[in-house]
Length: 469
Image (cartoon, rainbow, N blue to C red; front, side, top):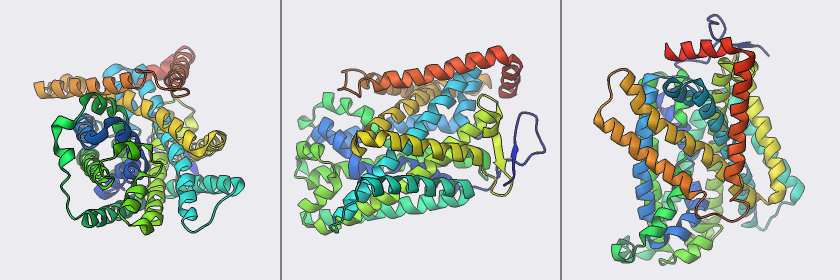
């Protein structure tokens, strides 16, 4: 196996395969991390339990906010097409320290998303097998989970273009399955009109807004195409289209699915909120119980695509931070044949497997919730920083307009609200401890930055110069 480090000033070593990823693969990357199928299959229970009959409106409001954040990402990606982009985006506006923490936060976000979906794979696999009267004991379940992580890591290691296309294909198949079953449910109902969901007088806007933090979590990952900017054929065009387009598509899909699932459950959002398999329950209520196995299969397909895309994204962040020597320089190695950051990919896969195995004794469903919550903190913090960074970056080049400031402020306020909603009202244990776990993680990154500043100040000077150039 041959590999070479890419460092600052090293112009002869093999690099990431620039120009190898088309717009289609960029879309596949973002869509796969969003994993739209998981929202009707599992996530929508939380939103329905909080927002009630106004669930579709909660998703619509969330869509508007996320598209604004996506516009900020599009602005920055068009100006700075870099691998592991968030480290660079934030660093160029607020300095190396802020950039380092942004990269550090997004590494945790993508890795914990990969962990949560790897845990969910075992949940959906168990549900799928039970439809045929089969069950897995503890050991085979652990083996299946670790094997799943291994296969996904190998796919990311071999070829980013192939893995992105596979991710798009798998996600497209799973979405089509969900849409087809939804159409069947509507046909059974005989109409698509649900008067109670269209009666705004019945909405309670307090609960609708309280559901927004989890609504935003359903979208996380829409920005991940930007991490592959260095490998895109036309990053200044492709990244904004992929990021904004996937955010908008996911929002329309989520809003429609929330509406039809509440409708299909006779507007009983309480029962929907208590369900561990909401879409399957709605299908059973419509007399389509035979589709349950298909739903679980679609969810497993979506999970594969999501985990693959998360490892692709996390490894590019490790690569970028290794290249700039915030992390060990081996993270900046690129495989000469596959042209992927193979060391970073292997590290991601090993970490995901270890943490999954460590968290599984807590119960796969509980562990899924804990990992997903930790992932959401990393995403939202960086989304907030990106909303502020976009207008600042434009101002440096005299391109800032009033609309850029307004969009940045609105996006930052929405993300601040999401963060506030994660701590107040105080969630139940252990979720009330998770924000502090994330803060401790950020503190480790800050301390490491301080150590680097003391031991190797010339590295930070070089990084600052490179970011400003």
